[in-house]
Amino acid sequence: MKCGVSLTEGHPFHGEGKDWLTALLLCFFLGVFGVHRFYTGHIGIGVVQLLTLGGCGIWTLIDFIFIIVGSFRDAQGHLLVKR
Image (cartoon, helix red, strand yellow):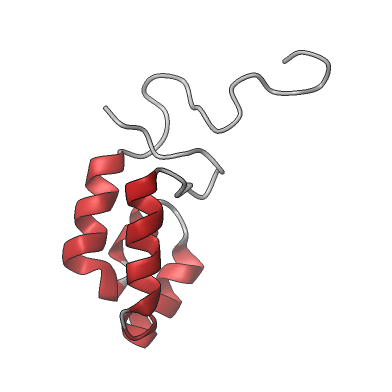
């Protein structure tokens, strides 16, 4: 921390954070059930996606795009880690 600003914001230390490829595959194959949201710790949104079948697939597609471009974050606010 320097001047009250975290130097690692959005970039977890090695070993922290959820795996990018795992989230991508979960979203692609089971996205309509919100499994990728459960994996990243977004339980509430995961339940909503489960009940609405991924927002009729639209929400899943948006999440898939966010994961591909690298802007999807886990519940702690960390970007997904590409290992």
